Amino acid sequence: MILQAQNIAKAYGEFRALNGVTLEIAAGEFVSVIGPNGAGKSTLINVLTGFLTPTAGRVYFKGQDITGLAPGRLARLGMARSFQLVTIFPGLTVLEVLQVAVLSRLRRGGRLLASLARDREVTAQATEVAELFMLSEKLGMVARQLPQGDKKLLDVASAFALHPEVMLLDEPTSGVSTREKHTLMAILVAAAKRIGIRAILQVEHDMDIVFGYSDRIIALHQGRILADATPQTLQENDDVMRLVVGQQGRPPGFGRST
Amino acid sequence: MKVWIPLGSVLLLVLALPQLGWPYYTILMLSFFAYATALLGLNLLFGYTGLLSFGHALFLGLGAYTTAWLTSVWGIRSMEVMLLTAMVVAVLVAAPIGALCVRYVTISFGMLTLAFGMLFYSFLLKFYHLTGGDEGMRVLRPVLLGCDFSGMPKLSFLIGPYYYYSVAVLAIATGVMWRLVTSPFGLWLKAIRENPVKAAALGVSVRRYRWYAFLISAAYAAVGGALLGPTIGQVDPGLTYWTQSGHLVFMTLLGGCGYFLGPLLGALVFIYLQDALMTMFPYWRLVFGAMLAVLVLLAPEGLLGLLTGRLGRKTVRAAVS
Image 1: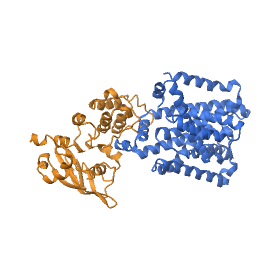
Image 2: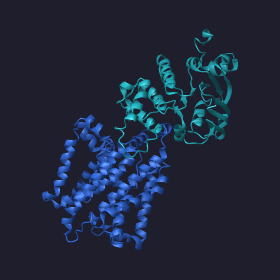
Image 3: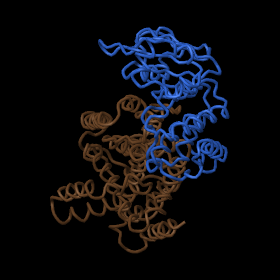
């Protein structure tokens, strides 16, 4: 198991955002977390990546207890994430945004007096990631000025530039037009393969994407896991389809393909 | 490359100034060298890391008092020793203060730094036997690079050897700062300024790097203070009063905190304008207040922003930011 969560609870006062969530992600898996708004999906990602400390429960990464470790530490250990809302460095160029991540991976952020411009390795690796995400033409552009779709790509690309072992994606296709969604997913999957990412956990609303790409789907409802199964099995689970999937519409075309 | 022509001309002018026969304006330049050095540090924290300190006069004061203490109490007059000691003292003091302050950002950071600044001011005022209280302490003439200029008249010393020594210190400080902001470290600081959450997600230890920036900026402010000491000859607690911290911030905004050289321009304009206004009428602060309001509303990028806006923003921006 590359990533494990045991009995995770997260409470905000009286409100229990997560209530006894246990899950495991194995190497080679692409797992999607689905659920209606407020089910605790983003809270789960935030707990797993160290942005929130759980009220109870432990998180293990490659067998090591990482509960409560800071996000920066986790990123350096090999766990990266993207955000639901585009999260970039608005005033930096595309190249610089990627360099921030590459420096972190190469442990070179502490070089006080070295010239960044002359560090060919950092630039080369940042450029390489930009190519994977179709951003090579825009390396010099300030992130703020990118079109929305490219901002989303850059957000995800910078996480990939860490070459993590596990990638957690919080709604990678949110805010992206329906037409662009599949392009983005194709880019993402290709990049993951190229970089050698061992497992992906994503939160996603678009059932077309969820059922099209996942090896396994975890359905959350009111902070609990309602189901944890393959797409095929899940489709036969009426409760889940009604409670979780039903609210967002059945995946078009999914019924046809089986 | 365009940048080098105006920069080179300015440097030549600065080097020629003592020979032009305006001793008064030449002396004012000494304040400029000192404040400019301090502001380079302040802007690493503000412009590059996104943390606004309202207490940097503390470190300026530490530097200045270091020169007073070393020369008049311990009889150490080597300027190099003073500069180094000032840096070490500033870093030692900044380490715990910074460690606390970087836990709180935005407005709390400003308030906390202000509080520490005022604490230091009260310390200087109350511990009379250590600091001379409100009278302050004398700074004796320093020995520069092993050369003792005791025989020289004061004015000749200040607009002669000490002037060029200060130019050299500012030049080195500027060069080192340029290396810092164009290094991997500098990029991480900018990343923290732009979005600390994202920076953390990409493996940046946000708090630690903010702390590093705080330490470096404190060391710079102390070097500036140490340069100021021999210029004014007598240091007193007024140097660390909160209005001083305000002036430092004002100079930075005046020149343009988004530009590497912005604070330097701000310091230059501030010092000469303050001098001119003070001789003209007693309400000079009123003019600065009005200027600050206009600046914030109409030219948030400062004077350098206005200048480069006309001269073709892209070239200069690319070269400085």
